[in-house]
Length: 277
View 1 (cartoon, rainbow, N blue to C red):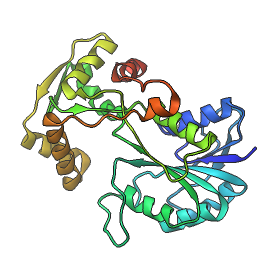
View 2: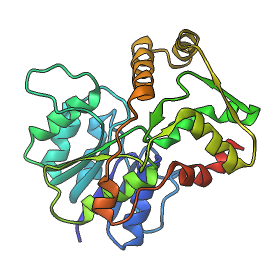
View 3: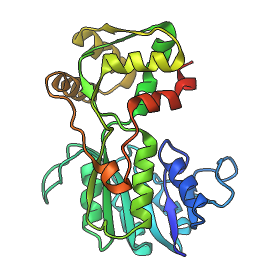
View 4: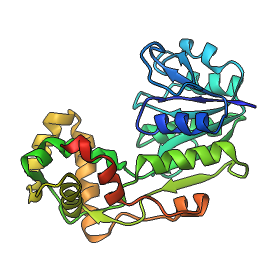
């Protein structure tokens, strides 16, 4: 049986991919910084390596058929893609909801550049383009514990996706045929407003939590101080504002590929209730 290398193997998505492949009895190799500290299933092989240091990847890629690639926000490095192409035959890349980047076109976000680098290789590839993760709402945890979440655009309706649905789609693509060249946009099953997300989280943890509508300018100052990237903050605020009038799109990708509905935000909140307590 062919081996799959999973990058980001201890992250929100990668850990579920590793577990699913191991449970199925499929050879899986987990790329981690320190194999001695990695908590992995017994059947998973831990191999040291770091995408930020391409020279460390050679041992991890030996004998690998497929690679699940999660890029951790680093600048796109063609050497990583070249190494994957030199060893593997297929790559499943966790991307974002981005349009294809044409030759010569400047990328707006690193996902586009990585997709273009992959398309230039002889690899068989599939892009799993995920809408924002529901886990991003964990940033509200301290405010949830205080009973009030102060953010802008409470009426923005988002189709946030459960990380386990992303993992299940990735595993399906890795273990079945017919996905070469596909671009799958993975979302939650419905668009839920920010304010309702807070209410649902409160119900999951058994606490009354309310939404406090924060003026956009105040939010810009606070988020810039927290995130340190004014351009990213402005992009987020513009997107949230747009979702007030036009809810974030919802796809049937999970149901079409897996034969079951995508997990709801309420399910996600119940799964992560302890993280908010």
